[in-house]
Length: 353
Ligand code: AN7
Image (cartoon, rainbow, N blue to C red; front, side, top):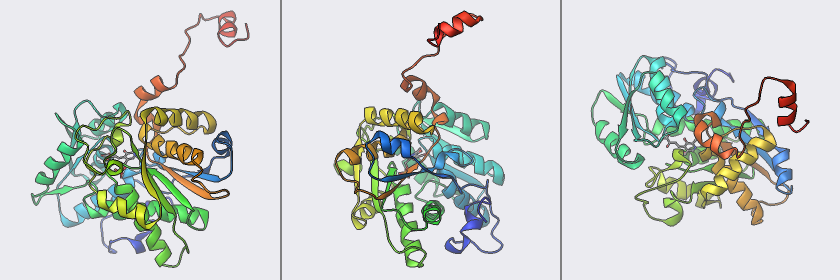
């Protein structure tokens, strides 16, 4: 059932009944692309596969958890879904709520979400509140709103989000025929690393795979509470999606890294932007800055000799680059050229004059 959404494809692993009203946009089944150019640019020595989650319906991995969270909210009769978000969760919630005919309320940090994500919340008709504060403040408010019967929280503190997102690990294993040796991904609220670890374990326990990957999570240097071991009160990073100072799934993420002999580390904004540009130029894959944190993690790990020769590495790139055009245009480090409408001008501008 690939292509019909993650609930239909993996329903035996998910908490749904035969009469559960599935709300889906046919999310999941995203491409896993082997990227030899990038590996060669780094000096070679391992196999790298990019799980391109930016090709989900709302252009981020959040759709996997959202389909299940909204489905379950509808099933129990909630009328309103609400979330705090750095942008992608709100975009996804807004779209799935529209599909389900539910009301959606999103709380986002004022002025700190990427342009494309704001467009998504508004066009899908979500009640969009910009909070004078950061993501962590917004999540506190959402926890309070969630006390009301008619409201369902669809942040990853809703366990159905994690259940839906674990299907990405299933797809990785189905594509590779086995679990990879290492799995890299960005870490913000730490729901995704928790989900992948759950998924890899369930697949191994069901006998579909025989091994588990090392989980390699990456925070941004200015928003790295797990790496530092303390809440970051004023998180700052160009990767606004992971501008989070007090992750909801903190302990679970630490456990995933420990149990898997992996790590949670951080990369600077400069490393993130370099990785975004490098991936776009060597492979034609355009990701948002937060997603490039995982790529930067590979660059860093490889330079430190942490990636064993010949290993199979998967990296999840979580959101599409078009989400944040402003950062991309600045980071491209090249400008367009205005020319007169004649061949001489064009030839001159492209260096053939
Ligand atoms: C592109 O949308 O938290 O560690 O509110 O948008 O599971 O939080 C987004 C997080 C990585 C981090 N990459 O994942 C939100 C939000 C992208 C993201 C993360 C996010 P988690």
